[in-house]
Each structure stands twice: as C-alpha cells, then as structure tokens.
Amino acid sequence: MNKTSWLILSFSSGLSLLSHAAVREKTNIIVIFCDDLGYGDLSCYGHPTIQTPNLDRLAIEGQKWTSFYVSASVSSPSRAGLLTGKLGVRTGMYGDKKRVLFPNSPHGLPMEEQTIATYLKEANYTTACVGKWHLGHLENNLPLNHGFDYFYGTPYSNDMSKKEQLKLGNKNYKHKLPFYDQDKIIEYDPEQSNFTQRFTDYATNFIKENRKEPFFLYLAHPMPHIPIYASTSFKNSSRRGLYGDAVEEIDWSVGQIVSALKKYKLDKNTIVIFTSDNGPWLSYRQNGGSAGLLKDGKASTYEGGFRVPAIFWGADIEPAVISEMGSTLDLLPTFCEYANVTSHQTDILDGYSLKEVLNGQDVSPREVFYFYRGGELYAIRKGAYKMHLFTQAAYGGKAKKKLDRPLLYNLDVDPGEHWDISSRYPDIIKELTDLRDKHVSSFDKLKPLFD
Image (cartoon, rainbow, N blue to C red; front, side, top):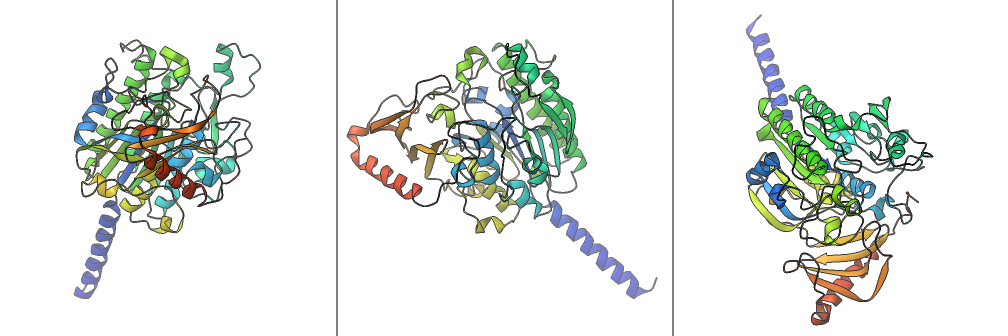
C-alpha cells in the first residue's frame, strides 16, 4: 500500500469512527409505564407498607416530580396522549360513551398521527413497544405501524380476556387476549403471573442487542391493573397483599433495567422515566391502589385521577424534587430535543420540552393544565389554582354534575381538594374562565373514535 492509499484509508476509517461516535452520543430513552398505579403507591411517595427500593434510589439520584399529570384518567386516551403529545380531542382518541378501546372497537390510533417512535426513527433510533398497547387492535393501529420496530405484548387490557372474565362469572364473554411477537399472535389468554418477568426479560435483552446504537424502549407493564398477578417469587411477599406484591415486582423490574444499563455502560447516556397511565382503580377497594392524600382516582378529574408518580433518572438529569407542573404530554417534545429532531415543531402539540428542567437550567414551562373527561373540559389548573366546571366521581360514583358556580382549590395549600375558595377569589375564577374559553375556541374538536 502506497502512502496516498494509506492516508485515504486512515481518513475514511476516521470518518467512520466519528460517524459511529456521533450516533452513539444520542441519548437512549426508556419509558416505564404502569397501569393504574396510584400517586401514593410507592414508598418514595409515602406508602408505608409497599417497599420500592429501586425506585426510591432513582428518585434520590434523579428527579421526583410531585405535580405530574397524564392527559386522561383512563388507559387508551392517556397512552395516546403520551405517544402523540396531544390531547385526545385533537386526535379523536377519546370516547364520551366508551372511555377506552375494546376488542371489538373499529378504530384506533390514526395512521396520520406521529408518535414518539416515528419521530425518533428520523434520528435512527431503534424502537420497541413491550407490554400493553391499548391503542387499537387492528393491523393499521398496532405498534409496528406507528414507528415501532418491535412489538412484544398485548393489544389491550389484561381483563379483556375470556379466561379472566370466566373467573368473574361472565360466561358470555367471547374475546380472548392475544399475545403478539411482532405482527404474529403467538398465544391466546396467556398466563399473567409471568407478565412482569416476561416483559422485563424481553426489555433487558433489547437493551443488550441494541447497546451500540440509540434506542427508545417503551415498557408498558399491564400491572397493577385488575386482575392483579405476581410471579411465584413475589407472591405473598408484601405486607400490602397481592397489590403490593405486583408493585414490588415492578420495582424489581426497574432494578433489572438499571442493572442492564450499568452492565453495558449505558447508564450515563440513557434517561429512564417511570410513571403511570392514570390513578388507582378505587372501586376494587383493597385490590386497587392508593392516590395518597389526593382526592378520588381512576376515571375522575380530581387530582387522584390525573396526578401520578413520575421519576426521571440518568444522563444529565440534575437531582431534585420538582413541584412544578409536568405531563406525559411533554415527553414527546422533550425526547425530540434530546434526539435533535425538529420536525415535530410543525405540528400543533399540547406539550413542552422539559429538557432544561431535567438538566437543572430552568423551571418547567408548563403553567396551565386542562382536565378532560372524554371530550368535555371538566377542570383547568393554572399555577396553584384549579377550577372545576363539572364534577363526576370515578367508576361506580355519582353522575356528571354541572356546577352552578365553579369550584376553586389552591393545590399548594389543599392538594386533597377539600376546601372550595371560589367565593374569595372571583378574579382567579374569571382568569381561569377566560383561559378555558380561549383554549376551547383555539381548535376544532375531532369526533370520538371510541364510541
């Protein structure tokens, strides 16, 4: 080889190394999403008998958010909000009669909607959806048609199963719960006690196989949604009973994910977000979770339905307790900023990038949050003040009530929404009412896809 050839080869090799280094510098992203986990269900959020040492450690080493909201207080619209960065009224992913998607639903997440996964594919991320999807079971609505390279899990909730419904005495339920590996159904009505370990094994193997390139892992645990299951290793291990067993197994799963990141030296180049799709299913009493000091739970627009535990850990995240507002709606623009993707900026989103908050350089840009039940705006929060226009309790509660006079709570003083202060602050009522009017007139609400 002559000198010129050697220089060309060396230069090309150098470019290759630089190119690979540039790819590797992109931040890996992992979202761990639980089902029906309440604000008060982790020991780092105050639960006295559920032990979650792995999550407690992440909360200390990273950021624990205390006013973090989902986009809806039930499964399907909440998951759509996380993945699209939009409220359900903008995408049609909501229902006024049916709150979530079912095995016979004719629709799902529209093909034209861009997800976190589709945007990150632009930056050459490998993407995986592991666990519960619940955004449509038809081919066009499944994860592989919404930016995900891999799908390993179920298309809807774990109670939508002939096997599980039979245990409840429902002999006429026809639908079996399918288990997918990519686009193939490999099993019907699978053994659910192995779900958490099964999905954890797949997730850690995904990390191993994709450790040399940037990746996005969406690990959506079916637990602790009813019916609750825990593996043999965790059953009867918690003082909180079966519900505690399931939550403590999820905490174990978090430990496995972090161990895999450390094993492959990815912990400094990966952010992990742990949160829940909505508040606890209170109508199941001891088999459901806890919203802690917050009012009500799943399906309501009180704080217990929308406010969830949220922990951010890894990469350049500055350790802190964040009491400002954030939301799953904010994850898409946050992740796009981490990945240097800008195409999302041409779309109308309901989220804001939290990157500057995560690295300790700024406060949260979110000043207002809108609480929808189906297609109706029930409440609005700005700063410490939350105004209710309608009230309706969670599943099994009283019917919708239109209020003659709005309710107003100072959530800094009264996070449990006990004491109405509307008569003392007419100026705040007017401000929030004006914000409501401006918001609802700023877009055309799409028809519900769930009804």
